[in-house]
Image (tube, rainbow, N blue to C red; front, side, top):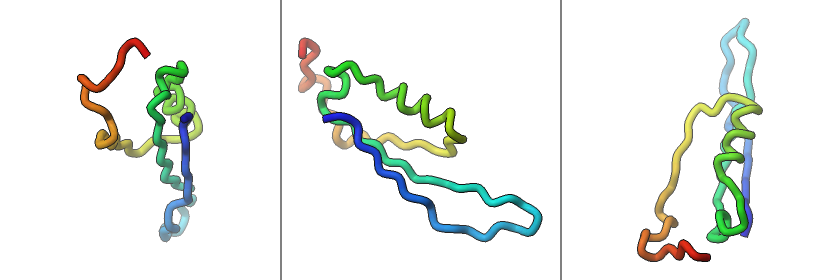
Length: 75
């Protein structure tokens, strides 16, 4: 499976007088098991997004990452 992305605008916050409001987004991306096998580079996605605006934080959820001995480097 390819990358799936979900984006939703963050809850609006009050902007002090004289300051310009900026849009903030929460983007969640989950790459499938065949991501690397198909030649996809997840870093390219992050580089692209960083050109669209500032990335204020990033978190990697490693729960779905298989153990190294379960990986098949030949496939």
